[in-house]
Image (cartoon, rainbow, N blue to C red; front, side):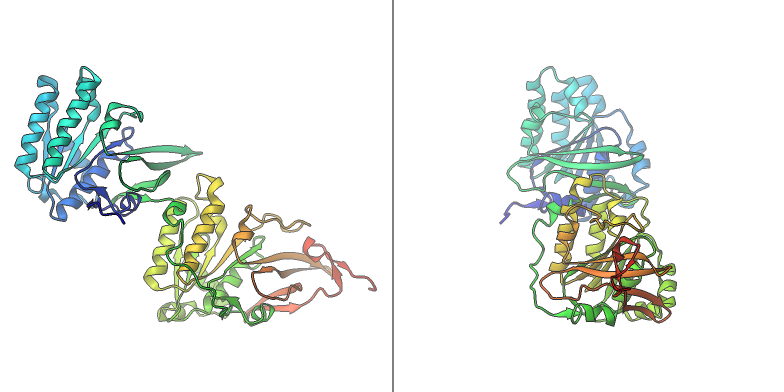
Amino acid sequence: MDKLKRLKSGIEGLDALLKGGFVAGASYIVQGRPGSGKTILANQLGFYHAREGGRVLVATLLSESHERLFQFLSTLSFFEPRRIGAEIQFVSAFDTLENEGLDEVVKLLRREISRQKATVLIVDGLLNARSRADSQIDTKKFISELQGHAAFAGCTVLFLTSARLDDGSPEHTMVDGVIEMGEELFGTRAVRRIQLRKTRGSGALSGLHECEITDDGLMVYPRLESLYSRPASLDSWSGEQVSSGIPSFDKLTHGGLAKCSSTLLMGPSGVGKTTLGLHFLSAGTPEEPALHFGFYEPPLRLVAKARSLGLDFEALQASGALHLDWHPATEGMMDALAARLLAQVDKHGIKRVLIDSFGGMTRMTSNPARLCDFFSVLVGELRGRGVTVMGTFELRSLFGPEVNSPLPDLSSILDNVVVMRFVEHQSELKRCLTILKIRDSDYDASLRELVIGEQGVELKKAFTDAQAVLTGSATQGRGH
């Protein structure tokens, strides 16, 4: 159990990476190129700490004026001008550094820490201090003296630098933690990253994590696989079944889908995957609500589509039995989406989710290699929270003899797999459906024609006299 006293940053995802926050009284380097978000992170922490009753000293070793910094920070919601000069004190040590050197900067900051009774010290411009040092020993001495006085005063220190310091640099060896911030281009899309490169004597979530800067400041989204390496709670396989919302489908599965199971609907565009999903959602109740988590059809269009199938989504929403959450599939981050989905599940007590589609989420990734791990953890976490999951994934080919999983191993991650195809049969284009897999349960694997009408969906027994139906071009069976 972690018994270290923690200082929360007020940045939820960052505190999760740090497993509770910064270690109180410790020292950290925050490094990254200009524009990477270092100053926002530090000031966001500072204003949050002030709101929580702490006192903050921000010392700049840069030539930039504080007025210019305040103009920039004023665009962010956490900025509170009334705290400046009260709980938060800004001091410029640039002239002292230029004219009198590092020793005098240390004396100035020690005086200000005592005068302000600071519990957080932010030193912006460590690169300038380094360039003024005659040797590595002077750099170490500067950091050591500041650390020693700050620790004695019970003060947590953040050193900000635009230099990318190596692990063996004197600065890294002196501090307790190193946070690196950066930005990478993936095609035309820029992705901000944050990494904890060092956390002495304290646990942390390792690796690269995505972040973004919004009007509320820095938002950090820990990698789902690191955050939930084990589900929040282990699911129990009760054997209980829940309705798919389609009686004829429930007959194929001998009573419905296993509670807390996950089902993949695979098929080409227009074959009826979302339609099946909407019926699944329609079985939600105010006691066990449903959530549509979608990327392609906004709520108004979805409600209209449901209405054409005889489903009253407006009434379901009004009763609290259904919630709709839509995200354009053009911009966003996969871990941010997962965090939002799990937050919605917790907020509304969701018990059934339609992810429409898994493909929409994959478009947000900057690292395709982690997709299967990501979906495995996401589905496991939803299951652990008592949620029955249905997800759609689009197959590229309308017709063809092959039915391949859209992602390697995705079908093995999910409990149930349903394949839907268009088929040309007796000079007509029809939809067909078959169940490929229902984990730990018996089911009817016969091909069914999927008929969509004003009364919803019906699965009819068909193709009994045909072969090669799933290829898209059925042929008459023998004897016909």
